[in-house]
Length: 314
Image 1 (cartoon, helix red, strand yellow):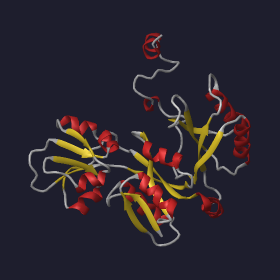
Image 2 (cartoon, helix red, strand yellow):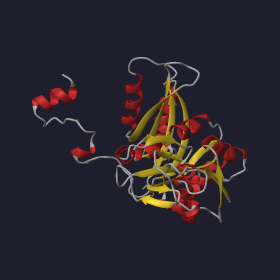
Image 3 (cartoon, rainbow, N blue to C red):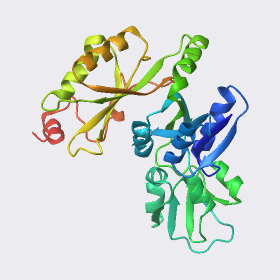
Image 4 (cartoon, one colour):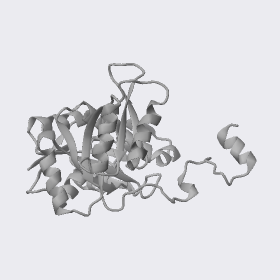
């Protein structure tokens, strides 16, 4: 099978393709690089690839907006699986390089290596992907990317593991055509009946105003369906109106989710399932997490009054 992905060779997405095809692809796979996320979606939509792989969320930088927007815009492409990778960046230079004045990587890569860039006084230069940054690195540049890039592009390792946060992870979605998604997901459920499932859902309220988000979240609580993530994206043709993109911890065919969808439709909302997939082992929320996982400066009920006043701007 042909698997489209954001290229060139050596991207983290390329690594995700390898991981997924080794574990879950139904037949030997050929990885085909494309220049941007839209081209990956187009290849799947047109049947030039049986599957596609795109990054959807970084544990450091959050959702990958182009991937999210492409799913929202695609009438016939849907996520059918996910891959989660531990992400670590090495810094590469050309052999015999000159004075180093710039750092280059995908914007998410640059964001994850800010301290390294700042300590060395380098100017950040965005690239289409981390692998493209490594492939095209100039004699005056440091490029950030996975270790594979050094091997592929004949680069010298300048420093290892230069990311700001150790243990960062990135989630990737495996894309397929919507027409065959139900059969594909049913086969996966039959093969792994004990898996935990997630569904990505786009909710577009037809009637907006005070309380619309509360109404939507109340619908989830009323049906006992856990919402593990909620982000908003603007409706491209309507200023000041948004679509809610929700991740819920159940498959779309479960009884509770079917009832939830019926409730939202009855309220006038427009719905679109963007994907359904068995969650990778070890994924979960922050229930019971230590306080130091919260953003710096967060306060809790047990904090002193002065701290509460400062944190909440009372």
